[in-house]
Image (cartoon, rainbow, N blue to C red; front, top):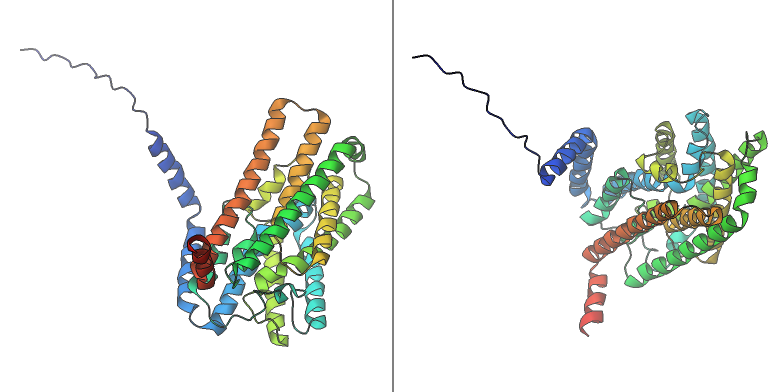
Amino acid sequence: MAKTKKGKKHVAPIKPYKFRRRYSQLDIYIRKEKNFLYFIAFSLILAGLVYPYASIAMWVGFAFAGYSAIANDSIQTIGTFIVSNEDKKWYWQWLFMGTIFLGTVFYSWYVFNGDVTYQRLSSKGFDQTIDNFVYLQLAAPIVLLLLTRFRIPVSTTFMLLSVFTVSSGAIISMVSKSLMGYVAAFVAAFIIYIVMTNVIKKMVKGEAHGSWVIAQWVISGFLWHTWLAQDLANVAVYLPRQLSVWEFAAFAGFIFLGLGFMFFRRGERIQNIINEKSDVRDVRSATIIDLIYSIILYYFKEVNNIPMSTTWVFVGLLAGRELGMRLRNQDSSAKLGRTFSLIGKDILSVTIGLVISVILAIAINPVIQQELVNFFFE
């Protein structure tokens, strides 16, 4: 009997379910970030091992906080500086900003008797040196590193300082001052760019004169100094409120070398928050942004010693600038919608950081827990 040739059975292509596609993307991301995730896991384990020993824990916490704070906040202070100086050698940028850092912290350390924070930690709730750490206080900067990797501009002030506060009043004061900073920056940038967009456009046409480069480096240096005077408290909160000579040398040396690594990498991945905004690569546009930001920061630095979120101020500045430019140019509804989308995304990011930091503060501090119980049940 002759064999019959079997025809090929038609197999319909199987489309992957949505969760399979998502799993595949997650798997690719995990493979890509394998070394970083190993580092995060190691850091969390290390934090768990050392937190009972205060003399060791304070330096481990400082090391994590030092890099994570500057990595996350690099978009505010050196973000526009990096992106508009891509043609310059990274080590010249590092030495310039590093020298300003050393001068800034040395002045505060010398004038304020060992305090490197310009007395930002002298306000009620932060004025006591920590002599007994809990695990989440060391884990907070590690979480911040993780969020920075996901390009989320979290407020380091809320993330790092809130886990050390002894009362909810200190957090409320920080939030209030930060909201004022956001509104002030948004309104100032919006007015400036809606009134002067055409003038600024004429200023940035053609090749920039050499004086613009000098102006940008000077203004960026002043901004960096002002930011340090505000946000060094986020890093130094782990250390004694008065540092000895050797403690100061370790503090300044670690951050100085960390800055070098940051400039070598041309900023962390969060740098994309800057890159996606309009006309920031031109040295003249970057100079104008930094000038407005530095003036606002300097004003709030002089108001009082309460720490504030400089991230919120910077996000407000970029939001007001983008909206003012779009409205002044009478752009299409699609471009305007994209601008509102960017503003909303940035607000969501800083809000996520605030929520996480408040949850950490509540989980750590029994005083705040009792205040919440009294508020809701009495």
